[in-house]
Image (tube, rainbow, N blue to C red; front, side, top):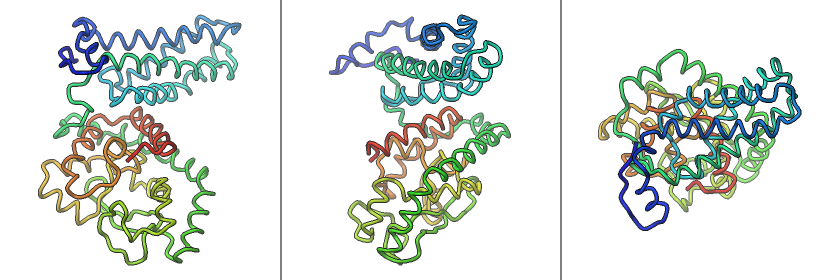
Length: 351
């Protein structure tokens, strides 16, 4: 935990520098107590009139804090910015929703609308608390830029049956749901491409997947036919008018959901790289191949916290972000990054 933070200009940073030593040492306990207190209070208010209200409130707090614990959230806060605490708190409460609903509906006889209301206000309350506490604490390597190499323990965990099974279930369920929701948009995009530049509608290219195995990625075609395999640049004249819209809204990535269903990609993971570039980077960048311990993703830690339009020279600076995800990957982080991705797409904060 961080106890000595340099004093710089802002009020928040000066306050963080004066953070009591004992508070920094007990940060894990403070987070747990804060979460439990918020959820207990919210539960007692929103479940007013329900049978066994106190027992239901305790169960709700215990399950939410338990999920946070199991997902490793109390070992380290992964938020880069204060607002990111909102995404992590909401993701944790969302993971807790099903077990809470089952337990309270079966044991405490609490109506489902009351449970839903409790979960919504619990997410709001824990988000506000964590965003406030985030300003009191600064990481040692802002903004959590990443690591140079993953540990043997993390490598083993990413190859464990439990991790692979839960990630596969999460990926398949979310990809299937997303395809249903976005199918009208995908049909419109396909028609627009066909009208503007004709076929093919999809762009198919060989990329490197988990374990260094190649696969063919699917995207909506956003460039003229025969544009080549070079990295796209801002203002690239190879990009079509429809392609510009698809790229700006990230809708060109939607066909990758089929790659996820085929098990070649994950919803969350490092950016899938072209075969030629990956081979070159592996020769010149230390530990580059460690990013292939997990499957590549449609979105990911580096995709959200680094600039969007990358060039080959950026890769050494991006790799620590990929390795940070590989080191700490969990369903909790995946859910939070999916939530954050949705916000970034809607408000165009990703660059």
